Length: 324
Image (cartoon, rainbow, N blue to C red; front, side, top):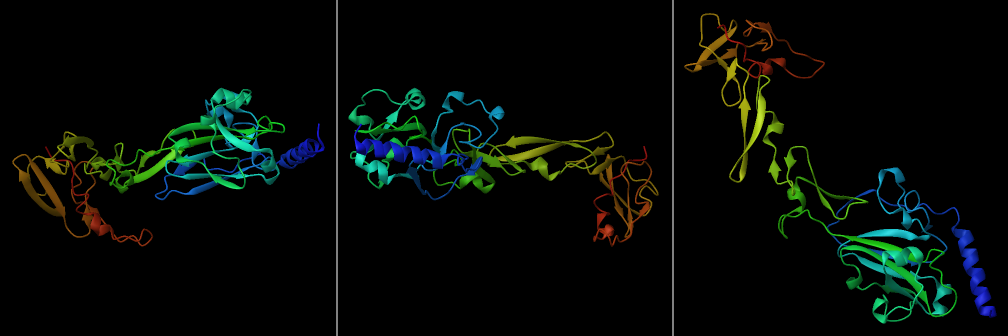
């Protein structure tokens, strides 16, 4: 063993000692799609960012909640996830540069066990030896998971010590057309760390792959404990109310029956159809739809604690059960 090689091994040993205790990778479990791509620089070194346990260290998650391959728990540079269109740069450790280092694209099995054979020139990530900062060609960063490992022309191979990198590139499926806004502006384009792409997570009143559908029932248009049923009519959404027996009308606001003397007590009764009517309460009164025979009978006062004028509730609560 030459003095140069001996010195090199000592440097590597010291680097591994420095790494010990710095194995938890910082990352987001859920990421949101960025409108603009970014540049990501990965330091090709053993001095920092080397993790071993694929779950608790490399991804900082509970291993019991995933189904990923446990064989990936090998020493490696903290895995990276990119958006399609991001740029990846490799920054070489200065002490490696005199040994003719390059990166090669390997299979998952070769990543786990480390390369042990001679590789084709087409598998090399860079056309020349890595010295300083090098950009990874976009052809190596297509959608999917890629495995890179170190390749030295001389000196010991350090793949088993952690010089290998797991890179996942994700695309987004959040636009109905190329120029459409993400998730129709009605949701967020997100990806969990284990998901293979970004997809829409809609706000509460929207649904659909691109959050393009408005859930009209979420506005609660049906009154008096009626059920709301969504319907599709052409390009727009509509709804239908399934009314209780005592009520009728599009929103179940009409009471089944006809106006009779004193039907509404403190209010005016109006026939809507030959079979239904409404009560319009006088100022200061409302009705209780859950108790029979109370039509605009309840006095309403201002509630200072709630900060609202309860008189405004009159027209919203004037539907009551018919005297039939």
